[in-house]
Image (cartoon, rainbow, N blue to C red; front, side, top):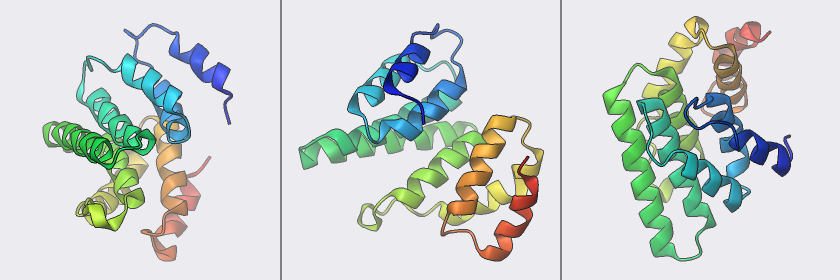
Length: 164
């Protein structure tokens, strides 16, 4: 796991390059750190593509966890959900966006009723993971799917063979 100083150093890199690995690592750390969530959101003030818009949506949803007020929590959740859904609507075949939504929906409490795309996203990810050209993203997706309760043991078997 990266230290907070390492993450902050990574965040100092030029925002114009938008190294997705910064956001991929940051998402994993953001739920436990309001500071990291805010730093990442600041880098995404004006997302330049739909993948970055999706990350902004996910980070906004994660920010809801850091608010005390239930009203602020719901506002952040709804705003983040709308951003993520807009990104996916614009690029429905973007594996990274579908992965982001799958991870969020798998970890969202059922009373929020944000779980209707779990099955379609699962099917999409399982059918396209082999052709994912981004090795870092592919590994992250596979590792998440292998630990997910949404994936059967039978579905997990071929995934294990895809790991390096």
